[in-house]
Image 1 (cartoon, one colour):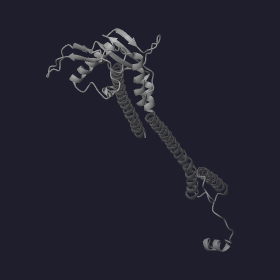
Image 2 (cartoon, rainbow, N blue to C red; image 1 turned 45 degrees about the vertical axis):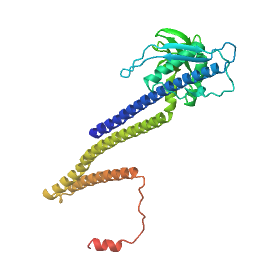
Image 3 (cartoon, helix red, strand yellow; image 1 turned 180 degrees about the horizontal axis):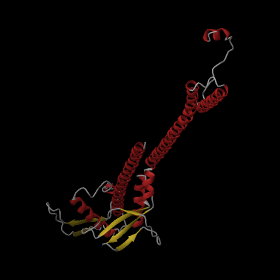
Image 4 (cartoon, one colour; image 1 turned 180 degrees about the vertical axis):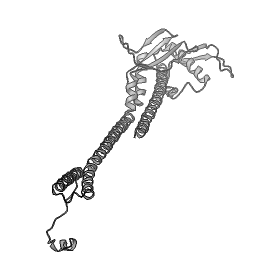
Length: 339
């Protein structure tokens, strides 16, 4: 029985271990997917902000507004993909913008992903740096654009964006003054100039809540499975222990009852043997004493049998007594007992 108990316990512990391992892996995958989403949405927000600022420059009709072209020259090694420093070349025509001309440049960078090729990343940085020199980035507007993209992905957490120079210089931030959040999930730093010294990095506040919200159904199902398994295990252990107790009581009962039954039987056999062997039948007083002793032992034996039957009846609640009927047994007695 102890072997069965050990095997069942190890099986349940194995189930709990694999369930926990599965949940942990699911949480890791969900966290990685969450991180990929916030990185992608931040890049989309930066692209959209760049397109909006470029469109605003094109539509600027104020006197002296810079219109024309801005060129950046760089060289790239085809093997190592190392790039040279960007060389700016600016050409301002100072001409009035023709507002009737339709341009699609606003959507030029919306679907652009700078991780495509090193050349595209470098070109993106040059374009961003050129536009930013004419129309500086507004970090609050960029944060609002990021919020729109996050909500489209089902992420409603509070967030902010840091505009940094190097590793320890903060140029601007959309975080409210006096706020000091601790539970943060950062995006990777998106460089926006040639040497990546200037970059933007987003932060999601309290990402664990969003992760648990995404895994709500999975966690609920796992918790329900653990509760069912634990309840079944406890019930099984109680049943096994109860069966062990019943078996022990049964063994004790059999041993005691064997002793109780053998005692009157042995005494009765001894008395009858003495009557037959020692010829006490003719001695009326001695004979009556032996008969009385046999009767007492048989009565005691009958009482034990009645107790056993009563216990069996109490244990079997569905016990039903047989129907009784009266009949004349005189003829039956004559056939059984000879005259």
